[in-house]
Image 1 (cartoon, rainbow, N blue to C red):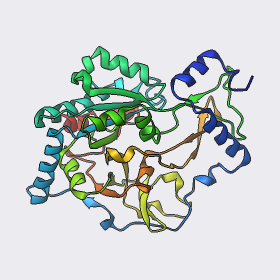
Image 2 (cartoon, rainbow, N blue to C red):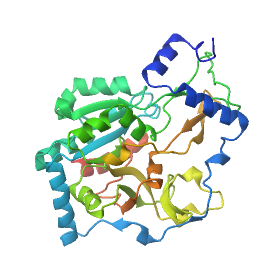
Image 3 (tube, rainbow, N blue to C red):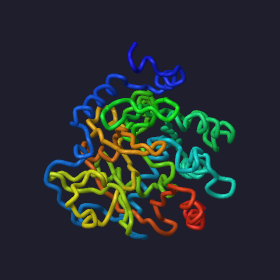
Length: 371
């Protein structure tokens, strides 16, 4: 009997339910044990250059022909049923005291998920086309999320316009590649990053069903960025650009951490903050990745060789290792347009809520953005 086969029955059941890839897991732990997969291997190889401001587009000005042209293109796509929303709702539900963030009340009487969905319902009714919603859950968020939608009558979505799928699951490791066991001698599970988004969207059959129903464009966004909404102008700009992917970037403020678009050996793609060399001045890039994307859905029907990132976490005051992939790295593989968006005011498209303190401090702004 192998080490994996000796795991507790409930752990084995979770691994089986949520698509644990044992072969990949063993390969990753071998690389960790051999020292070829480590914090240093995260660092991007090649010549890195900070982009100039012409590397991204600005939003069109109010009243401009450009804005109206984009709005018309986006509205037509929604009316034709070409648009879907994919909400990243995975992870481990740790920052809100173990409660799944999506079901937490963000504004009086409305959860994070209710606010995300109300925009979809509004745009669908305004333009007369269906906008299916796809929820990417994790083993940690799946049950509570499904129950929340059921309890609240799909939050106003028609039954046929809501689908759930789950990202994968894996096991945390020690720094030497051995299986991590907690104080109760149990293994520790985790969701291996939002890079799972395109993989499991395809494997679940959601992609095929979306395309077969006439879907063309997907907006991907985090559940906790309530400013990331279906917007005909943003959608239309993507369509008119003829690019396969639009990545939204926001002005960088002091203390911000995250990925940024950077030239790597002459190619512009989103590099996560911890992947920059130590001697690279990340402040030389004045924008950073919001993790909101509009993608031509047919481009997701393929494998992407996303980087296996070595991530250190703390569990019960002990360092553990988990391997994650990042959805922003799609920009390395698909022709991408970068759109600089606002992060203040009613037209903000970036207002992330990571902790209860963020929510307490940001409710007034949320009311403005989501009202």
